Length: 342
Ligand code: TXA
Ligand code: MG
Image 1: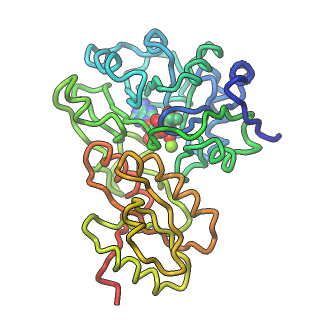
Image 2: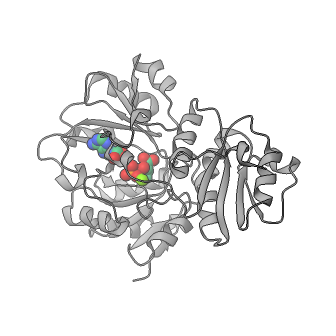
Image 3: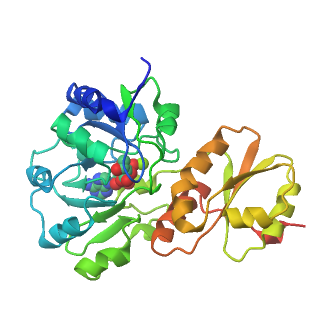
């Protein structure tokens, strides 16, 4: 089976496939998701198979209305309603207690909670409306690889494994949604994203940030955060702020292989790079960099001579917190060390 790429004029066809229990990747403002009817157990199982995803890692349920959340959540606390009113549609995923028996264990990984997301992407809201069911949607990548920000990325990972991909061009935000657990007394951010701690606190007051506490031997609350993630085959090095890029260039020159260089256009322009450097511009500022990060990492994966990738860090505030969270994971915490340059 060859995977079909649907144009936006073919949403009806994509919705029919979802209704039949087949898998269709869909666009969102963050990254592409791997869609299936959340109420169809077999379809949901196939999502795990297609991605090679561990079955204890629960899926986000994508909705196109708050009424749809009410069908599956035990209750929606007032603060959650306030956040929905302010940030939906948008890049905030909210975890609530599940209504007993409302969704299969396959969706929730056996947890008593379920994550809801109302994406800011009209074609996908139309797709949900036409299918008439909520859609599960993990990022549409092979488990462990950077999330897909174009239909081509999805095709690369999942061609032959899914029925289709609804193509809406490159995604706008580029990093996955903020995951906020509202199933406990104090809301906790389990994964940072474009809706920031500051944004959330402006609506409901003080919350916790727990994603950074997840070390090797701890059990994270978002099961997905414990797995190796966003990793291209080349080793990624984080280039900390304040690092002299001339030192980076010198180090690259000393390597016997090609090195990918991901930095803002302004930095690349001023830098004299050796012949074995392969440039990728992160644009200008952290918003551009977040939108381009996964595309850059994926691009280097297809260039087999690139055995290292040096990538610019940004201050870990607001959207920068999400960017640095993903970059840290793709680098396995490894930083470029100017001290090693002779
Ligand atoms: O932007 C996004 O959120 C994208 C697009 C497609 O919507 N989706 C996405 O899904 O990133 P995924 O499955 O790749 O990441 C969902 C994260 C995982 O870390 C998972 O463990 C966590 O959310 N999660 C889902 N349900 C949960 C629950 N009930 N409790 C705790 N964590 C949960
Ligand atoms: Mg993912």
